[in-house]
Image (cartoon, rainbow, N blue to C red; front, side, top):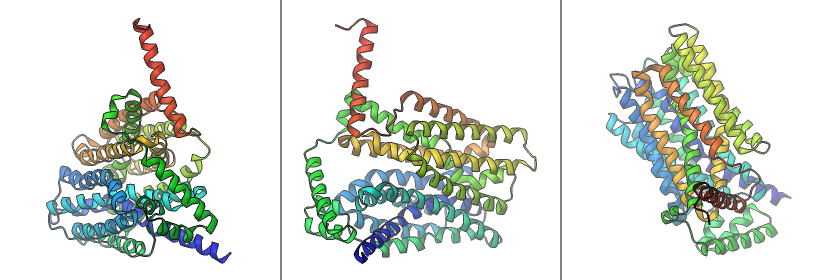
Length: 474
C-alpha cells in the first residue's frame, strides 16, 4: 500500500516538475501583454507599433522553429535531457530580455526564448504521455494545457501588481520579465531528480533502465507488462515506413495534411493571441488607463483557466466537430460585437467595460471549446506513419500564423483602429467556420485505422463521382 502511494506521489512529482515547461510557455507568451506599454516609452526602448509587433512576434517565429525541431532533438538525446536544456535556454534568454538595452537585443533574446517555448510545446506533452499510465494519460497530458493558461494568468497578475505599484518606475517592464527566471530554475532542478522516459530508453536499447523507471511509477506486474508493450510497439514502428514529402503525391495524404494544417490555422485566426499578447493595448485603446487595463486583463487570464477545466470535462461528452463549430460561432459573434460597439460607443465611458466583458466571453468560448479540442484533433487525425510529418507541419503553420498575427496586429490597431481590425477577424472567423463545416470529419470514437480508411474511401468515392460526371468512367 505504501509502495503504491509512493509511486503515485512520484508520478505526481514528475507531472508537476515537467509542466513547469508549460508554465514558462504561458508566462513568457503572456507577460509581453503588460510589459509592452512600459518598454515602448521614449526613455526605454522607444517602440512604435511595428516595433511592438516585432518584439511580440520574434518569440513566435522562434517557437515555430523550436516546435519543428524539438521533437527530433528529443528523439536523438532524450526527453529529460532536452527539457533540462530548455530550462537553461529559458533562464538565459529571460535574463537577456530583462537586461536588453535596445530593440535589437530584445528581439534576439525573444527569438531564443521562442526556441525554448516551441520546444516545450512539443517535448513536455510527449514526455508526459510516455510517463503516464494508459488510464490517466488524457488527464495528465491535459495538465500541461492547464499550466500554460495558469502561466498566462500569473503573468497578468504580476503585470498588474508591478504596473500599479511601480508605475512611476521606467523599468517596471524589466521586473515583469525577470520573474520568469524563477520557474526556469525550478524546472532545471526538478528535472535533475526525475527519470528519463522509459519509451525513449527502450528505443536506445536500454531495457534494464526502462524497467527500473517503470517500477518506480507502476506496480511490478504492470511494469513488466508495459515494458513488453513498449518493446512490441517499438519493433512494429521500426518496420513501418514513415511518410515523407514524396507521399504528398497521394491524394488522401494531401487531404489529411490539408485538414490538419487548416485546423491549426483556424485556431489562430480566431484572434486569440491578439488578445493574449495585446489585451492591455486593446483595453487602453477602448479607453482604460494603463494601470486599470492591467488589472482588467486579469479577468482574461482567470476565465481562461476556468474555461480549460470546463473544456477538459466537455471533451468526453461532445464530439470534436460540434465543439469547434460552437466555439468558432461564439468567438466570431463576440468579435463582431466588439467591432460594432467600438464603432457606435467610441469615446463613451462605457466602451472599455463593454470591451472587457466581451473579451472575457470570447476567451470562454476559445478556451472552453476551441483550445482543448485543437491539439486533440491534431493528435487523432494522423495515422501512425503520417504523424511525424503531419504534426510537425501543422504545429509549424500554427506558430507561423500566430507570429504573423502578432506582428501585424499592433500596426492594424494603430492605423485602422480597433473596430476595423476586429471586423477583419470576424471575416476570418466566418472563413474558419466554413472550413470546419466543409472539411472537418468527426474523430471522436474512431480509431486511427478507421480514420485512415475514411480518408482513403472518401478519395476513391470522390474520384469515381468525378469520372461519372465528366463521362470518363469505364
